[in-house]
Structures are given as structure tokens and as C-alpha cells.
Length: 479
Image: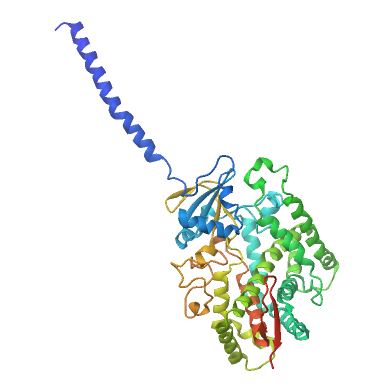
């Protein structure tokens, strides 16, 4: 074989080898790329172009019910596309545990609605709405915990709660006929909070409640889905006017306590309340306004609503209210002292069971507050994209027939002797959330709810007229 023939054979073999190599390598490349692809998004309804799944939520039902119905089809972890935004919804204890525990570090951001007109610096330093769990945010929670929600702080404010409860009893004893319990409970709760914060009633004599309208307006601004939240390029337009409405309500709310703040700054007398603490620590007026707004808007509505829902459920459950009254009568023995009642309510198991059962059926925040994904992560082997909004449907979890026997029936007995509580460790029962973003005011809210429910049931007999409006009931003073 001459040299030329040798090279021709070598070239032919090389081409064949190259072809064989390519035939093996190309499929391997595709297989490797496929194996490196992230897991898919959670299942969910097919989104339409531009609007996503907005059409699936345009029902006459509240959002948490619409999402619960969709979860029946698409499963416990679900992806919803709202405009340009990704929404991940968990509707089972397993999904809640992965979101709030296993991935708490990745998913504990806070989605801040466009309606909130605060700068990033304000949100980060003086607001519970801080997007990140920063040093400032942790310091703020620690301050509120020590000064308001810790056991020693609750003991200091106990007398004020008793006085407000006693005023409610006295006022209702003067009533004749039908009473709007909701309005009276709201006024009482407002004054309980305001006495903790600055030792002052905001509602005088159960008259006009200056907080009612502004808190309602702020709540509507927060709860409504604005187009600017779904399509960020619309933020300069404020298409539904929610930002403007929020700012108006916020300004009115600040005006309620700003005279108190000005007076306290020049006063030599110290009430030793939360406002004094903030002033002594150098908080400016805007910082105080933002923080008090968060505390009032986050606590009053949820606390009042739980009291009203508990009384409503008890009125429709003769066995439950009779059992609770027996427990209260045995504990208080006919005493008329609110101090005695307040000192014993933590040790009344049926009362606590009634409140837990109300929170199971009627969580005051049925979808919790919206979380946001700092980074992409996996939940139940599905991808949660970075920046996605994340919700837990605690309403759906609390009514899941696979978790609760006869879930639509008000049955406080299910919590007697049960280790389940609302401190964020039992993911089938999360009325106050869990993880880094758990509600900081659980201890104060539960004390107020227990005291108010015990007071109303112990001092009065109730009859409920048939009505589709506010809770209007006829109290009969017990002898």
C-alpha cells in the first residue's frame, strides 16, 4: 500500500469515527440538558394570554373560596397566573409545612401592595410590612414583643383590659331591646388597644368610632387586587384609586393620635406606655405613625371579628353555649369581678376550645398575608419562581374533611384534650401563621378574645333574632 492509499483509508476511518461519535454525543447532550431543566411549575388552570387566570377568579365568591374550589381540581400546591405575576397557593398541611418551615428562609419575603405609599427605607425600618426579614425588622418585632406582647407586658396592661370589659358590661346592661354587638365590641377592642399604646380611649362612651371607617378603608386597599400589582407598568396610573384611598385613610388615622404624640413629647409626666417607649428611643413622628398604623390595622379587625364569630357560632349551637356557661358558672361562682374572670380565663379548657373552633372555621385572615419568594426553590417537587407571591389557604385547610371530622359543624369538643394549638407548629391549624412571619400579637389577641367572650356569655343570656345583616342580639341580664 502506497502512502496516498494509506492516508485515504485513514481519512475514511476518521470520518466514520466522527459520524459515530456525533450520533452518540448529540442524544447525550439533549439528555443532559433535559436532566438539568428545573422541575415544572405547580399544576393549575391553563392561563389565557395577557390576563392569565384572572377569569378563573372572577366569581361571586370570596377569593379564598374560589381558590379552595380550584384546589379540588389541581391539588394541594397550585400555580395561578395573575397578569404578569406568578401566584403559588398551598392548600394542605404538607404544602404549608414546606412553604412555612422547610423553605421559610426562601419564602418569608413580604409582598407589599402598590397601594402602600411608603418608601423602601420606611418599609424596612418602621413597618411590619418589610419585604425582607432584615435587622431593622427583627429589632422592631423584638421591641413590640418586649413592650406589648410579652407576659410581663400583658400583665401590666391587664387592668386596662378589665376596665374596658367592665365598661362594656355596664353599657349593655343599660340597653333595651336589640343590640348591635359588633359596634360595641369594636369600640371596646379599639380602647383596649389604644390604652396599651398611649393610655387613652379613642372611643368615648361607645359613641362615634373614629377608627372604624379608616380601618375599613385601609383594609379594602390592602385586600383588593389592584391592576398595578398584576401589571407593574400601570403603577404610575393608580387605575382603581386604591393608593389615593389608602393615603387619605392613613392621613385621617394619623390625625387621631398625632395630638396625643405632640402632647406627650412636651409633657413631663410619663404614662409608661408604648408611646413613651417609642419617644424615649428616639422614634420620629413618621416612624410612630407608620408603626401604630400597622399595629392598629393588624389587630383590631381580626380580634373583633373573632369575638363576633365566636358569639355567632355559640348562638347557633345551644349545646356549646350551655356547656360554656356551665364552665364559667363553676369557675366564677356568681362573682361579679372582672379581675377574677380575667385571672382565670387561661385555665378554662372549654372556653379555649370554643375560640380554637371559631378560628378553625373562620380564620380572620383566610389566606394569611401574602409571602414573596426571595429566590426560586422547590415545594413538593415543583418550582416556585423567584418573586412569586405565595399564599396559604388556611380556610381550606381548616375545612378539609380528610383532616377534620364533620368539618362544617361547630364542635369545640374536638379540641378538648388535643395537643393542637395555634402557635404555628400544627400545620393543619394556622390561624396566626407560622415561621418568621407568624403574627407577633397572638398572646394579646387571644387574651382579649377570651376575656370578651367569657364576659358576654357569663353576664348575659342571649336570644338571636333572624337577620341577614350585622349581629343584632337581645341580651337578658342574668340574675
